[in-house]
Length: 500
Image 1: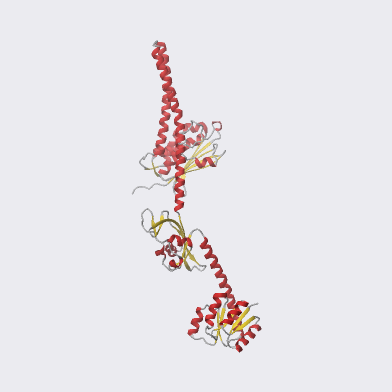
Image 2: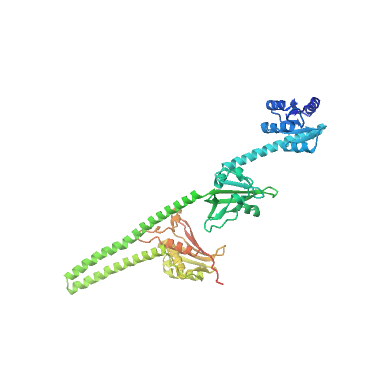
């Protein structure tokens, strides 16, 4: 049952009011004639509502008493008065009453005002709880949160935002967001348009580009940000919010990760080079010793028959040295391409012509292991080097063929397809029906010196070099593979523009 406290210094009015309330089904917990009695009864009974005469006896009137009740107990108040002058109304308004009844009043009017006041009080209580919940949540999050009103004045800043901006909430409140949030490009040092102001203007969420720093008291803090407008269900703009974070530690971690990756790649590179060079170098050292022995014997046995056999042996050893030297030259050439790709002059060229050249040069190898399927559709010209593009296609076709066994030559299939991707780029797809690769292999397939071939049958540089060449043409190369099914390599190259 709704309990009501009456604060009225006229006893007859208080008694009549109590009788009317009880007739309406309310519980009257007491009647007070001054502020002290009102506070004692309120503390003892915690009523649902107080009916307060604006003018009561004592130094403190009803309006000031209502302020004390509201601040100390959170009890809603409805004012009763026979006076409705402007000054009284103005003072009463600032005490946030939930109703105002001018005496004399009718029972129906009294009931309606009380019920509306109780409903409003409950709604305001839930709203305060919701606001407190949101404010507590925003203060607890690890990112900085800064909110502004529709005019761009700061209305909220959580502790992380206070720390990053170097000011407390009360110092930030009401200030223009452009004054408290000053951003600039780390490379050009040019100011960045305020993202919160942009969110207010454009009414859409925005993210800061990479490489933006926050200027604060002579310090620079690299940040990441997301800003969005705050709009109610009716589409009215209520303000905007920006969530941002200091990414200094994130950048340090990225640098550490990049360094670790480089060190790992360097270790792989050294190990690969050591292995690949050891075989031909061993052959050269061994053949050198054999040739020295043959020459020594040739000098000791000058007969024509023995000279002829020794010369033949030296020719064989020379052939081994030549083969080992060519192997070393190939490795050095691949390393040169990997470490410092040649800067060929780029030209606008037809991808189909380069692809057909690669297919023609590998046709003999393809015939030994698979059936070739060509699907060459129209594709845009690209800006590239013909020689290096052919090299990429030959590498991909050769790898695809080598993934298929000779025994299944009649059922193996190599698909070479050229078409136009949805974004307008030229797309080259090379698909085989070979052994395929698992996720661990696919993840490292473009790393230098990574190979699945037996020792001595590949340097592991072909795909890495191809990847670098494609990226130098501003293209992309990707792979999808499944063990026992096959692999699909896809190269996409942006359409080139004809010089005007």
